Image 1 (tube, rainbow, N blue to C red):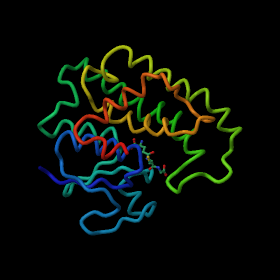
Image 2: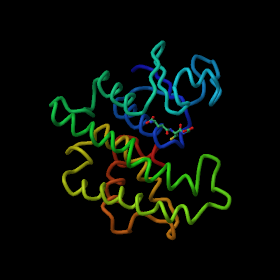
Image 3: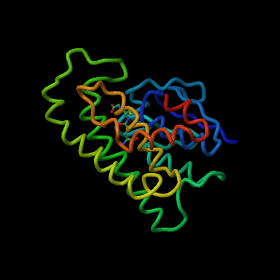
Image 4: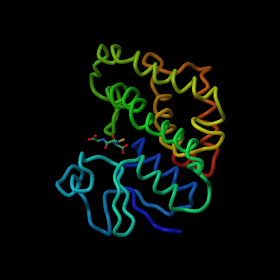
Length: 211
Ligand SMILES: N[C@@H](CCC(=O)N[C@@H](CS)C(=O)NCC(=O)O)C(=O)O
């Protein structure tokens, strides 16, 4: 088992994505703001040298440093034996990449960055959330949910019949969306997203990550 460090916070949806991949691949990992006992201050010059936009997660594996959750998940999926998280067939792999890209891009943006973070963030509930701005952004977030729901009618997981990096990058985002209070809710009680999340939480030790 190799040892990696995931720079960031366990509450980040994308740190959780990397955790899910590590767990399925049985890669030993730690999460935090240190590498080799050296503290890397969030948003410091040192942080921006590691991620050009100063974000999390960043992967440290001895001297190897890698930013961006999709790149990290792909790297971990390809470098380790064990569960297959990325297809070897070029077309199947391209489909998984497509959904992974949508998960870290349009879907995350509509649901987390532009909607949910208006209401709750790393520090807790936002004081006086701008509800009219949230209302104006809600249709885009609901559309992203509809896209996922439709795709889930096609096969067992988001891009294949098995759990792939696309699911790892998507499910933490969806799980956060299920936590919104009723008046801000994006997902109906009968949505296929609920059993999908539960199916993923039942894998490996995922319920310890998707808390
Ligand atoms: N494109 C990046 C986005 C990562 C991202 O947005 N991370 C959030 C936490 S979930 C973050 O670092 N937010 C702080 C910021 O944007 O300044 C990736 O996929 O890794």
